[in-house]
Amino acid sequence: MEAKRPTIENELFRNILHQMAAFPILPYFCNFFAVITAYKLKITDLEMNLIEELRWRGMIQDIMPGTEEQLNKEMTSAYIGFDPTADSLHIGSLVPILLLVHLQKAGHKPYALVGGATGMVGDPSGKSEERNLLSEEVLKHNQEGVKKQLMQYLDFTPSLKNAAEMVNNYDWFKDFTFLDFIRDVGKHITVNYMMSKDSVKKRLEGETGMSFTEFTYQLVQGYDFYWLYQHKNCKLQMGGSDQWGNIVTGTELIRRKAGGEAFAFTCPLITKADGGKFGKTESGNVWLDPLRTTPYQFYQFWLNASDVDAEKWIKIFTFLSKDAIDMLIDEHKMNPAARVLQKTLAQEITAFVHGNAALAEAIATTEKLFENQSAPAESLSVEDLEGMEGVVKSAFLKEKITAGIDVVSFLAETNIFPSKGEAKKMIQGGGLSINRKKIDTPQLMIDDSFLLHEKYLLVQKGKKNYYLIVCN
RNA sequence: GGGCAGAUGGCCGAGUGGCUAAAGGCGACAGACUGUAAAUCUGUUCUCUCACGAGUACGGAGGUUCGAAUCCUUCUCUGCCCA
Image (cartoon, rainbow, N blue to C red; front, side, top):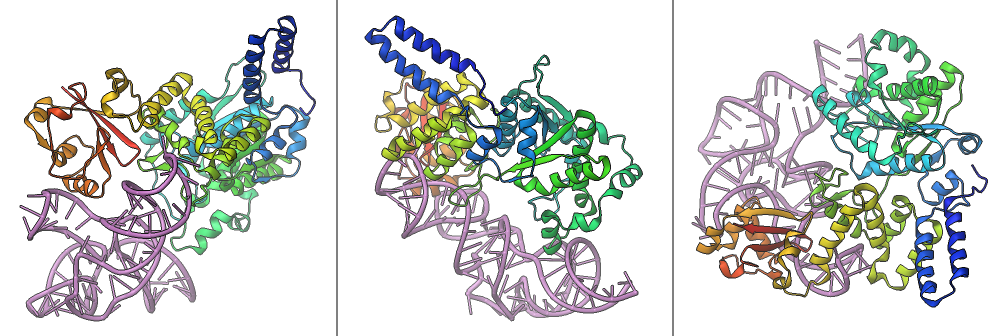
């Protein structure tokens, strides 16, 4: 894998040079640079092997000795598990997904495991409390959602030698009886070993204790690895760093039960420089499902990254090469206000998750709302207003506006605020604008004269939350 | 089965009869400053109400008292220890 591969990209480069030589005219010269820049931005560094690259990107926390050698030696099958705790993945799962994508790009075979069985147990890792069990119905629904999303990001083309595959651990656990499990699996791992795991230790020292169910989680996940090792020749497991303990139980099981050798590495948990939780906004989790988090909101999330975070995240969440990223970081340092890092990051990751069309819409909406903020709202055309994809739109009866209505009631009735009291508080705090004009009196009456194009009202809650009210 | 400790607002945590819608901190939201950053400063943060005000609330139920987060009884749950 380490050897330099002749690539399409190199081919492309040569072609461009060729063209240059054939038509050494000035316009082509300009064009040439545009292409070169695009070229630089798109290609991951060819000099590094997979592990080196992931290390540079800051995507490796712990790694088992021998993993790098194994990956360099042959096409290796590797897996990551996703437990169906919700019917959509959120951006926390993006890093594991990207690990699989990198892996496949490097010529290895990725397995995406949906945790139909493990989801029934509940992973104690990183949790300070026992969790409620999900009902089978919910789990089934969630599994379908998660599966559908995973399908989008990896190449499942069956003809590929390293085609991605989807597996569900429920398939090998559903007929595994309790007695068989404790004899075949439990016998190989001591309780002492299990208790030494961080996730278990923390709970034993903590206040809430831990049920036997969650205690067994590491065995269940460990067995997954063993099963994949036996049936799919899967030798590598990856995951978030909180999974390290569970993963190691798997390699241990493979060693003791099958006498085989398996490998692992984990990626660090994504953090924010200010210590806040990654992936949360005012409105909650950032999901990968466009119905839960619109592409516009998704794009905005990344655009709002702080400088420190953007520099870290652009390495993790984009496929840009080291050179390209170094260039962007320099550019950003020279002119931080332009926020090239945030913009590039947001573009790349939105395109990866939602596609180019959705990205274009997200950018268009962003421009309308933020680029000309000083321009009066009246300057927005009907098309501008209607075309704001991702902005929350709601309908309102025109008669009520014509008749005149006070702002507070209006805001409560449009469901922008859950109650009049909250609407009033926000107005008094100076956090509300209509048609880009700050509202400072709760008694203000809304009537026809406020309507843009006799139809629309653009309401702003805080600086970044926009609502479009359509009156009919 | 027995003993001990505990359960307070999203979280942590003070409060041991009226001054308690409950200190303080964190988190969250908003404002100012800025770059739709960060840091800082300011405000808001149980629910409803334009407001006066009303309602609900210190694990559940019952009791003592003019008055209970605070005292008593009982139940539930959690942790620790002993069998």
